[in-house]
Length: 175
Image (cartoon, rainbow, N blue to C red; front, side, top):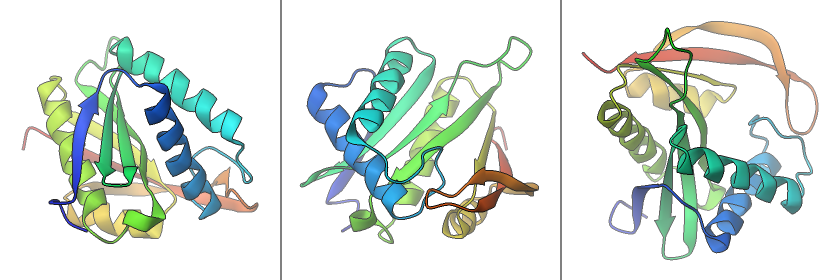
């Protein structure tokens, strides 16, 4: 799979089919052990409810939602939380960078990150922050120029149980 077989685009509204496919991606990531705020097993109802809330935020302009799709449907996504406190209008938080296991190691994560950075610039943001508990994601963020700040130990539970730390990163977009 390559950029010729998938595309990334910003969406402002989601239909039921897209929500269902995004729920599939989220469930797959949680089943695979990703620490993305949910515990295993993640029910379809909880996953769908999450994406409905995200869709509301995207429609309201509180977040930017980027979705990657291939011939089989949605295979990845990332969000920018644009709504920040009034003393941080220049900042956004990158959230829920998810790639379905069937689409990993093919450049999609990097493409989603580059698209998120471009979208942030288009939205007038100059600073992005994120956190991750995934060593593979850490390698990707480092390759893309994100700066590692440090680790908070015992930050969250892994989806199958047990505490994990989270690593904080930032990226200045005006450089």
